[in-house]
Length: 91
Image (cartoon, rainbow, N blue to C red; front, side):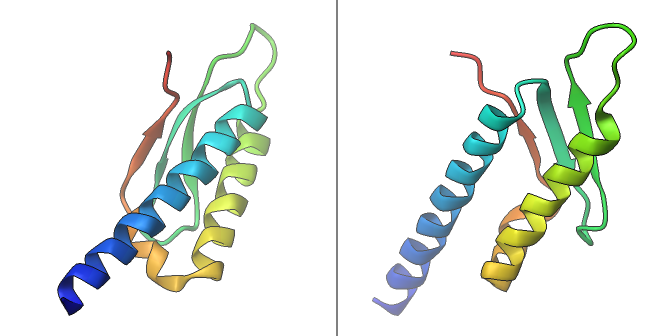
């Protein structure tokens, strides 16, 4: 029973993180994807932009800010984010 409750809590946190990531992709339409580094000190981003425009530093900073917020809200979220890659979903 205790294990079930912990598993349910982890699934709920994962869903909340997925919702935050979906919001991030909506706010940053040029963001194709990103990977989370283990120490949350940087994020590698992939963008779809036009020639001559490279907002990668600004986008990486925004992605990192959101990741740090998620971990600050619940430190145990770090285990669900560390080392993951997120990509835009095309429907």
